[in-house]
Image (cartoon, rainbow, N blue to C red; front, side, top):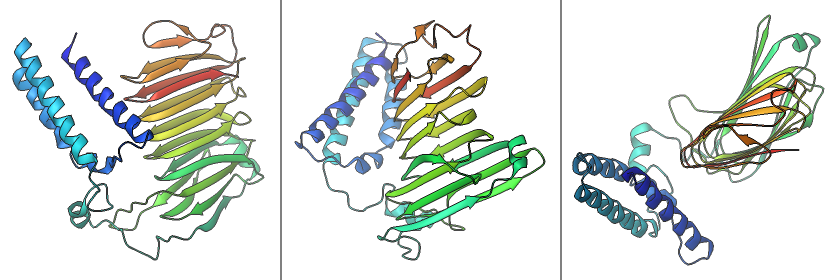
Length: 319
């Protein structure tokens, strides 16, 4: 068995045991402490290169021994209460002038903010691109609207903006968590955004986020493409078959991804999922990376899904 597979297996076993002990309230583990010891990854990689150059049994044992010792150290430090409330440390905040304590923009009280852009008949003939970015936020799609887009924000931290750029053939809508000039801004979550989109035009949706949750029912929308790039996120989307072709691209780190597609649409899934779990109900496996529905070739409506993830859970089902 390859050493890399064994090492990844030990790491997954470590994470699973820690999560299980947390769930049963046996330990209290502070994951932000683990981030402080990210150089451990460099140490383990270096040891693996030095002692496993000739793929010797001794080199394998040394590499595995160092990995176990390092994980034991991380397990010990992870149970100690953090000295500060930042994931990146106080020194990092000082060096990069991160905005942490600006009470003008960060408040414990919830604030409701509404954004909207009007819909005009010419928008139907244009390519409509919606770019969404932000961390610590729950995004929902809450039905249709007579406007082009409406965003109702329940804000505890951070600031949001909605901008529209238009040309003869393209509308580009950008909804994002805004940064102050010259500073980075982090928040501890608690924000919620409810979108309403017009159902008449075609949509190309691009989402870029770190931690957060997305719950979009797109079954009644003409979605030409949906692209998601996220870290520790939860993604739950339902697609329709109102267009001949829909492209879906999902790239994640550690995420829970659920995609639902209509039974009448033919679908092909291409995966590059590493150590991720895959559950593709109603699909035929073509090879280790490709899956298809039985009606893929015959269907006039097709959905192409590309999944790329490190340590995620991918589920694709039909309704």
